Length: 112
Image (cartoon, rainbow, N blue to C red; front, side, top):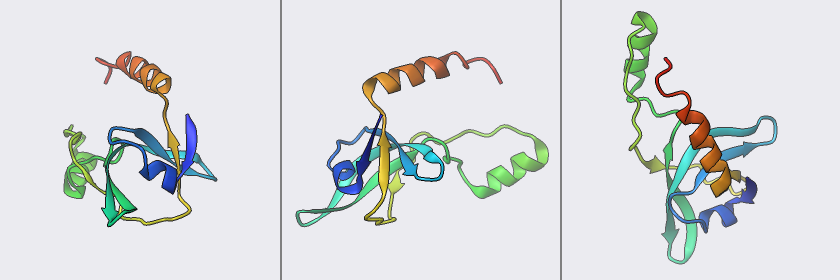
């Protein structure tokens, strides 16, 4: 894993796995970076897919909280970051980190 500033992060390709770096918590969330958005030649924003906060709607969560029913997560829902935080830092996962994370998660298949 490496920590990058916003300018370095925006230069990365679509498909980069990252978390937001928060000084108080170290890393927050898990997301995939999509395409960088440019205004002329300046990188200004990017698309992302959250892998943690990817519920279909607040209403679905409300029902699940009341009934205990399962619901499907959305793993193909892209949106803009839109925060424009110039001082933001990003924790970017290495290929090795991703392989180990996938291997660890795969052990959970079948456990609910």
